[in-house]
Length: 126
Image 1 (cartoon, helix red, strand yellow):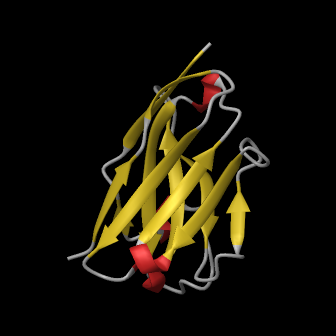
Image 2 (cartoon, helix red, strand yellow):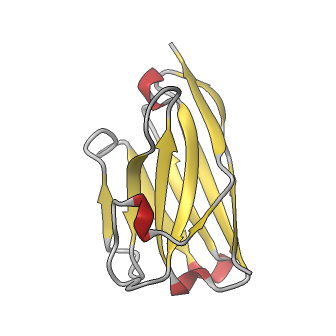
């Protein structure tokens, strides 16, 4: 049974930073491509960032490019999302997700991912 546990959310002021973590259990995270998505109130879930089996294979939504960094530590079965220069529009529940099919290739589509974390709230105050 694969489980993902998101953590690291919180309340931060505009311009601040947070680091989200996603711990994988039940199967080594090196088996998956990993992604982060978010859902703001009243909006659809949207792609934020993804990393393939190779940590060098990353992709970001335009809205976070240059501010967020996704990384993975397979020894710890953990994926991170470092978020800098946060803006009020980054306020959302953030979810990590794992993609087991063709993990060498990353995806921006939620339905490509098989497993999801429970979500962690990020609130950026203006």
